[in-house]
Length: 108
Image (spheres, rainbow, N blue to C red):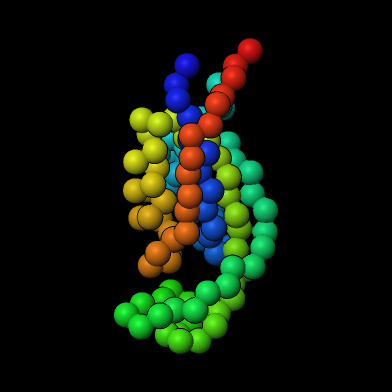
């Protein structure tokens, strides 16, 4: 059984479908005979771009908020680097927020 990681990221609603397709095509969300599996929930992302930032939205030093989608999916360990590269390539943010950690997966 492959080792799995949970992957979570936040995407502006306007780009969610494109990023989900990119990470799914790179191997995220593979569960048995299914691909591109994920869970999403809407929320509001908040940030302040600091000096040196080139923000997709907002201006340096100004608080910003944006409607985002939180995406959760699983990724086989050997595909994690490729999935993160695909996520960064498809994501509009200069520094997309993402996190991953190992998880136990059980099959029938």
